[in-house]
Image (tube, rainbow, N blue to C red; front, side, top):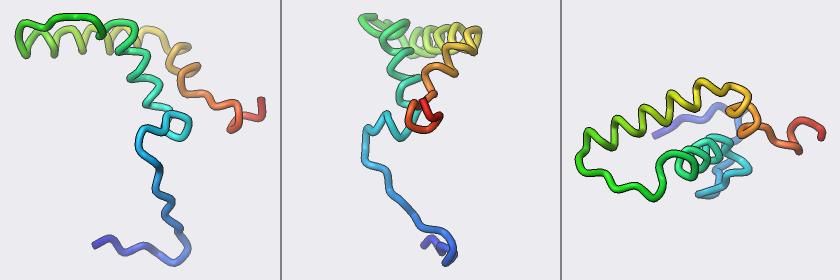
Length: 76
């Protein structure tokens, strides 16, 4: 059981709410760019390709920033 302090209000997020959870956009970008429409023969293939996709993304910090920005949160 979680004890919530009186000065904190929990606000449950709806499932699949990419506007409220920016990492959803990161995963969607990775799936669309490197991971979709592929056939994986082994578990190791999945891990290798996922690691390659992750490394490709981390080489593009500007892309990560743009995927996580929210107009409503940054006054744009």
